[in-house]
Length: 306
Image 1: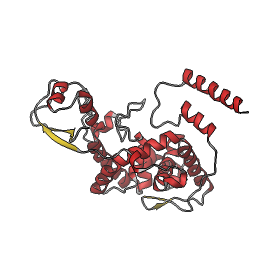
Image 2 (image 1 turned 45 degrees about the horizontal axis):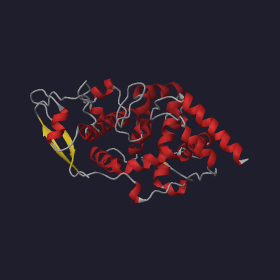
Image 3 (image 1 turned 180 degrees about the vertical axis):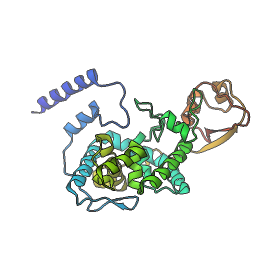
Image 4 (image 1 turned 90 degrees about the horizontal axis):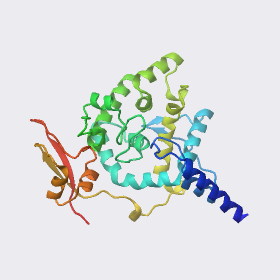
């Protein structure tokens, strides 16, 4: 039996390595070769469902069998996709404190940090096949509409602070138009007009009563599942010691108001290299930075190396 299992694992590994896509969008539910092998080896167990739950203090109607099952599904997907969820938990330690600060400053409920996470898995250079980019996965046109610069040299969708503030403006407008934070969150996936039309056509007022396309139908439940797991990771068998988490790094900033013709040389002048400069400033998309008169940018640098 044991030899058969290893033969099966080997066959699956070969097949996946041969036919698996080279890039997996952070929004997809594609299970990689390692994940499948891990799950075949792991013992399966039933997951606990919360008795009650909320998003932005708006109650999730778990007494509705359809809502219950959709929530349950996403709990299993995220709990058994071990590598994915573990990496999210590790990255959250570094990025979520700053995102929480910005949400609070902008008057947006704290629960929207989970929306940010499902959009990008907190990968700085996250980019979807459709062209959405950054932590908040803005499309270029939407990013420009909300005040972000997007061109060949600068793409502020990759600037965590600016993109988060732009997302806050978007969510406030969606909430004003649709009435609840839950609908505003759904609108981040489908657009405020698309959600408003669905509500009108189906003569309902709640996200949980809507019949939607699969992606938007699952969207809120992915947020809810991740919230539940991150609030109580041990409950779902995720136990990471503090030293395993990716902690916040000490940084300093520079205000730049003149063009930089060669970013590699600039990096060397700051005591770092080009790779490190781009790691701390993923919004720099070229090897130079052209600055028009009256414009300034803030460049982030590591305070201590080592």
